[in-house]
Length: 519
Image (cartoon, rainbow, N blue to C red; front, side, top):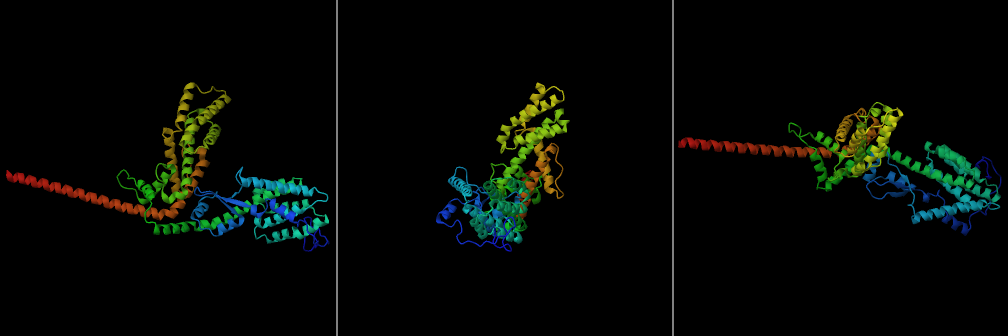
């Protein structure tokens, strides 16, 4: 038990008057060597996190200290952009790849550590070398999973997990290893995120002391990840407050020394300057809006706009998400011709969910076509099942063939029903882009996909709005220059035509006058 009850606390709050012994356990060369070979998961050297890739490059593996440095000294424009635009951007736990040498070494080290710990505790009398090492590492973990504002909690932990006192208890044979485990679990329960409450509760149900500590370390690793992502969330607010100006500044600096322009971006904007029915070109604002609409279904045979390259993968994925959603809506619209679907809301909603699940994994038009037959088989099964539940006959051959033909066609973007649903989708998104008071109600055919429709629109609006904040002035400048150039070219052409017309008229008059004079 602790030597000084006024300044030291054991897990149960009891004091002890014994003096600290000089011959501490675990100081032999053999023990030191073994510790270095069987390091537990709690060591800070083993705590690493993955910074996800943002541009197709390999993810970066960072230690906890490196995470702090990255967030304090963030100078990578792609990282700034990703954190600001992607609310789901998080650090991930690092695990060595399966079957890699690093993974095999890690597994061997950890197994050896726990085997040695269990063996030492089973000795008579117990040996606490590894137990003391483990408590030392757990003590060192708490500053990483607790806010520095919790100074009183950290002070309390340091008092209870006083390693000198623990070693003294081990020498005297009074070390209650499980009591320390209970103390650690109690502190974790008070400081963990709500999402970890169930894991903490499970810790209290474990009887074997070695298994308790193994699970304590697993849970602490998750709490470290929570803390890292908490740091990210705190940094996100500052980053979002300044990221647009930061990116505009970086882009302006880039333009100062890069004088060759962005041809793909210019073509993208130029193609959006279509003329209306009166042959009047669109305003720059309307042209930009049309250009953004094109991102919903980008033609991958075209070169992607250079200035949006950071978001290229995200935009293309959103485009495929839109096609999936449009196909789902087309299928349900077709199925609504069957009364058992259109007149039974619960049947239609359930079928819509099943269709959405079947198409969820598709990533391109070919996969949509490949999966559409599975959709038809599910539709057929569900409709016939519901008909039979109500004592009706299953679909006859004509109805079945007609329904199958239309559903199979919906896997093709040229399907009339899908074209109609796509136009409604585009109209909805155009309204959503203009709306400042929330999203409009779903268009016909999309009511059963309201959550996915709104999630998609919110995601694409966020990408477009952010990039417009950064590049909008540049886009307006390009379109204004292009408009002036077009007007000048048009004016020149009109003047030339007028001159030619005048010249032709003059020549014709001269010829006629000459003919009259000759007569």
